[in-house]
Image (cartoon, rainbow, N blue to C red):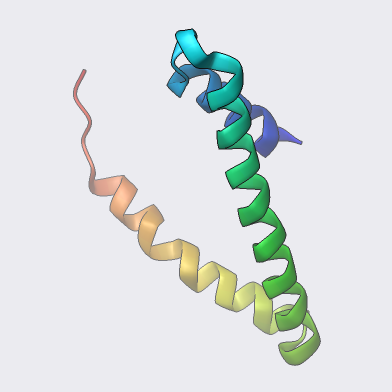
Length: 76
């Protein structure tokens, strides 16, 4: 639920106010396709590899971006 709230806040910030409803709906639709596709993929990995191995793979995928974010210095 928290991820949806964060995405909605981002979409509202990124949306052009002149076409707000349409652009917000497009953003939301694209993210729903991504979540659905990821759910199918991860569900298949659970069946093939088991929970522990799928969790390990997810952690290995997420680790490099987290390290990269540590070194990015954004200045306002």
